[in-house]
Length: 396
Image (cartoon, rainbow, N blue to C red; front, side, top):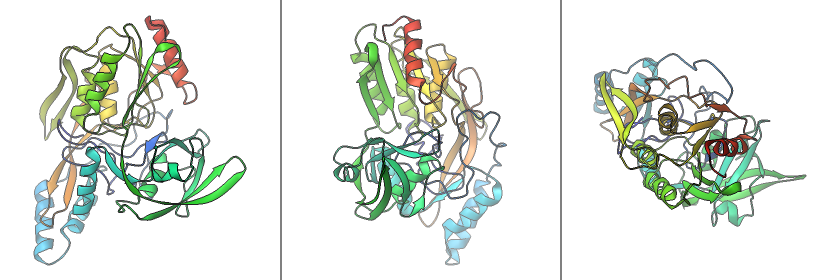
């Protein structure tokens, strides 16, 4: 988790990837994912699939940040890699979410906070049978120009099979682990009986992290794929622009996190102030609160799944705990630990766990996730949410 004004980009356990200041996110589970996500290290413990029960792991050990700084400084003084020395300290600690990023990785993900990323313009999801499918194609991107379409099956990326793996791993391969714009990537695609390998070149793209459409029956469907800068205000604007009495489907499926203050701003669209979450940093308690003045009367259903993580879980948990929304879908990922960045002498950055966050009722999320009020599988979740809105008193 990252505190207000900071990032919660996803990444894999003890892997390299995204983050900037107090982090609160990780790799997306078997669900929709955008190719602005970082990689999950091959062989690292993956996220639990929707429908699994029980805690995923014991709480991580804490890293001694003084030891971390000393190890990195000594390595640099000896002409060695400070980042490698820090990585060894983090690995020994047992901190499942600790990670070390080099200067380039850190700069790349700083750009992602502004809603820009390097990729090919594909959003992916994992189907129930383990297939990786194209969920959305960004207009004007390399994939769109090549003719790829939503529903296409992605079998491999650069020769590496992706079926049966989390969607985020396929996304990470498309992204290339921080590869520069213009670098090539090949995608093995299947559409019906036709199969081919499509060469593409990565480019710098603008992420469309908040989309709004009218759902069947008149409800407003707001999808938030990540909490990048400005996304919280876009959610507020969409709610204000919704027709009077229309229900809202807030779709957080596959949302791997982002900026915590943007999630808090989004919560303020539906709450009249009050707590959104509490967390601690080295034992010091802190509370995140929503701004007053939100729409507290409009019927609201929140869609979640195993890819709903970190800042997205913070938002879903707040709306559920405070009785503002009915949550629909499957249990969320369960990433509720707080990471703090430590700059290292060679310009790299280590992020280590310093605490955990809780929902307004005091419930811990880390390793547990949020169980929705209404269970629904991926194929029927949206329809079930519309039924919920009808029951809440809206013509959805």
